[in-house]
Length: 348
Ligand code: CP3
Image (cartoon, rainbow, N blue to C red; front, top):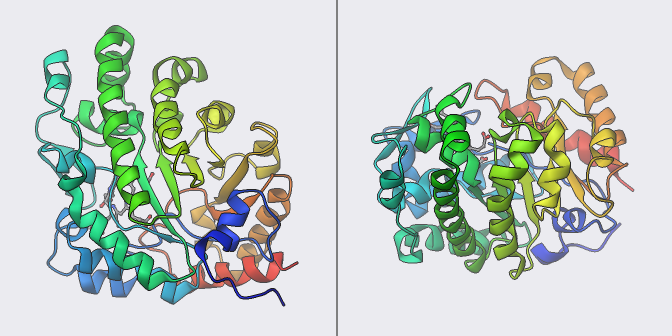
């Protein structure tokens, strides 16, 4: 038996992020706090998504729900990538079944000038909720997060969710100086939002560049990488592990590592042993069970969890996760089962 873990710093999750030996592979799930849980739906009854993010009592409860239920190795702060944008005065909402919708999209240099920096006092409810959580969680680490400049820019430029990111790419390619000015302001907002969470006690951060996979590697390196690098470099002084994740980013894994990540998140399209060859030898990987596998029955689930664990051994460190967020229709008992399978299947 290994000695009981007494602080987040010595947790299996942080050890795996740092590439240190672990008693078992740690596991958490993107969107573990959310609609797959009946207790989540109950506390959210009649409360808007963005309102719930600004109520420390609700944020604390919702963040703790999956930790209590599934025994995951890390908590992720309940919030949303658009919360810091809202906090700087951008008029936006999260529409159920749609996603973030922005009242006045940002498409010109004058629009970019409307974006102001984030002051920690704009998100005092985040500081309060993180503080509560760190006390409640004890040795379980809390992951803070923010959206990366490209993914945030896509919502702001398109005005909402988008399949092809057409207006975003058109702005990027036709008006690079406006594009870079926009991303520089978003990078500053994201950096401050992450700093607030780390100062309040978050043990790691994840930068979500969910939609970066829409870009070629050349465009990613030219138009996006400098800004994500600026965010991760600014966080380096905090010493917390930095996870960098996107969807459909198989061709970008090396570049996303170059941005300064300690851990690169991988979706289900690239096996982890192949992904390990695309990042530096000291970079850990996070992922990458297909969220759809949770609907395929226990035999398939066992096989696929075992495969991901096996392939993950090729990485400097492995944090088990899904390749993207938990789908709302997921049976929560299956998530608990994944935690059991990961822990039992990786016990050393
Ligand atoms: O459990 C967790 O992972 C922590 C909470 C979290 C949420 N959003 C809560 C949420 C996190 C980490 C996010 C990040 C986020 N938000 C991303 C990056 C991660 C990813 O999925 O790639 C993105 C792109 C967003 C923007 C966003 N917010 C979308 C696309 C949606 C879904 C809209 C819908 O209804 O289909 C949201 C809303 C949202 N954020 C929900 C949750 C739990 C659902 C809203 C609800 O419960 O009413």
